Image (tube, rainbow, N blue to C red):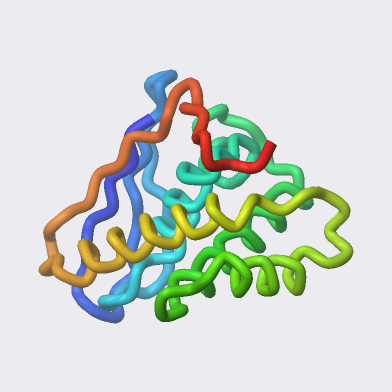
Length: 155
C-alpha cells in the first residue's frame, strides 16, 4: 500500500491519498495542517516501526473494519512514542516509567523500551522532514505488505 501526504497551506485541512494493494484508491481526510507532524503520519510511523498490524494503517491496508479496542491501543502507542520523541535524550528507564504509567490496566504487554526509542527516533526524522516541506510538496510512504517484522518489537 502506498500513502501520500501532501503538505497543504497552514490551517487548511490535510489529507492522505491511499493506494491499497487491491487497487482501491481513496482520499483520507486529516486534520488542520501546520508545521507539526500530522496525526495520521504519526500513526503510520509508530505502527510501521513497532510492527503493529492491527492498528489504523494495518486495518486500512487489509480493508478491514476497525475493532475499537485495537484503534484505542494504536492511539495509546502513538501518544506514548510522541512523548518519548519529545524527551531530550531519554534513557531506557525513563521510557519504562512512561510505559508503565500509560499501559497500566491495558491488559496486554507494552513494547520494549528499545522498540519505543527506535520508533521515537523515526518519528523525529519524519517530523523534521514534514516541517521542511513547502505547501504542495509531499511525503510518500510504503506500508509493508506483508508486514516486515521489526527485531526491536515486543514479542
